[in-house]
Image 1 (cartoon, one colour):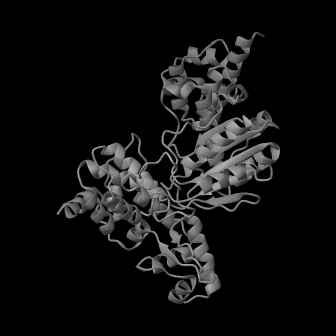
Image 2: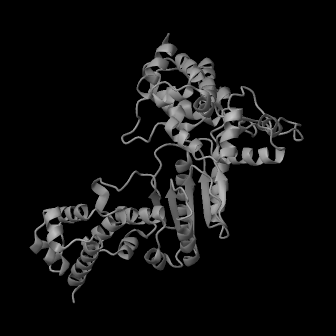
Image 3: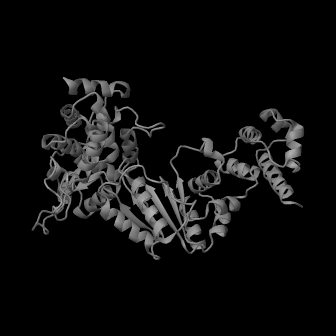
Length: 469
């Protein structure tokens, strides 16, 4: 049997198995798909060397195949098993994370910690956890690039929250077919026999971006790790998941106050600092928003007063990159001073009312934060609701007193809210190492918990009219 005949026979077997699993006869499949009975018989008997993509799509739609079945059918139609697709993308030149579009701001320590974890042979399962929009994917992207370049290691990058299958012009490339095949396996807790047998002992970094671990999916990932001794898995998640042997790296919002470290020392080539340099240096959130401002409004001179207003906006929006970018988009209509007032009054309405910045934009930040809050256990939700109205910082003992519970129990729930990223811990003042830690609920989260939200369709116009007054 020639290679072409073998590929045709493989597609026929995959098609026949999918049809029988769907409980359809050839006649029924023909009626549902508009593909002739004769064509279906020829396909199943391996008489068609290269099935047309439109025919494969019609058959998959008629059988109502999920992502896994559809990707397997497409791979077979292209004459490629999953192992063949893996082979096509496995080389370090092709198997690499997506290249970044923007500069990474203020994540030097987190990037160093994550790179060290991924570079260690002892740590093979790492989860970056944090709020929506805080920059988990961007940090994972940078760390994966470092691992890829440093060790010439293939990186299989799978976006798990991409909202379904890829339907663009790249849909039939091996990389895309592989992603469409593996994604539902992970989300449904399937088995990885073929994937594990191919990776085997080869060094590989598997990145599952936006993966929420469940009791059903955890065993499958552990099976993959046990089967592939040199495989490392990096997850990004909105909720902390405690997996045996895994490591959590909580990602907090960007600092809006002065980051620790010595101030920059001007070199001999530096004649004089630019306006605002002393106010923005080592304030990552401010530096990030200033980059947005300078691109959107290049005519706006970044004076000390402008830097001060931007700093206040960053503080009101908690230094969350997605919120900063959304708020800056309003600069085409409103002044920075107006944005500052809007951010102070209702930060969520300001952010969620912004026009979409990209095609296929994610859900509004307020909706994503509400989903994280809804997933909290009752004790943690009660703590968040009790401490959200507090205008000033509070301690674990304060929370225990408000809730009427022992301090040890309050400390456990405060720790959990820190892992979720819903509260912020203030750094200890110099000489205050013995003082109890102080915390506050993020402004955006406080607005969500305590604010009466206007109807979604007119929330932004009301707020903007108030800010412009």
